[in-house]
Amino acid sequence: MLRSVGAVLGGLFLGFLLVGAIEFLGHWVYPPPLGIEKWQYDQIANWARDAPLGVFLFVFVAWTLGAFVSALSACYLAGKSPWIPVGIVGLVFIAATGFNLVAIPHPLWFVLSAPLAVVASVWLGVTTARRHVTSS
Image (cartoon, rainbow, N blue to C red; front, side, top):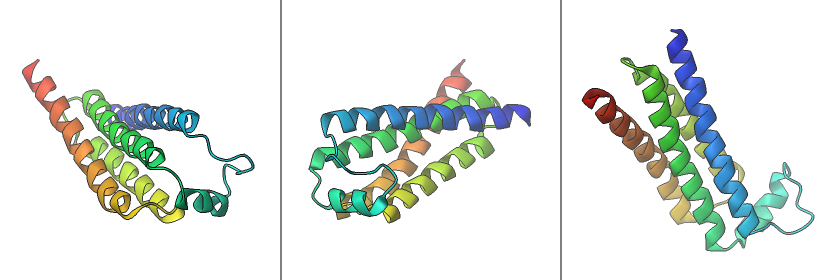
């Protein structure tokens, strides 16, 4: 039980740390205009409508790699019974994706592909981790 809790917390920590790092890099490459407050979603929404493609590509890569690393690490940390911890980690990433898609306007290609990419990344993380764990 404690190992499963640690797997969830560790997976989420590593995944969201990676998301934050990639999005930080994205803000460095594509800085938002001066005067936008971080938690003012109406200001962010107005800026996002005209944001360049690269802004959304950084976010897309951040979410997919974050979900992959989160599932991979949760699977490794959980050991022989990873399915519940990985399921929780996957649901948290899917919920976070959904929240962001509702809170901030995104292009249609992003709205359609991001949830699928997050689910695929979680599956790929589990598959990769299980392959390594069973071959060891």
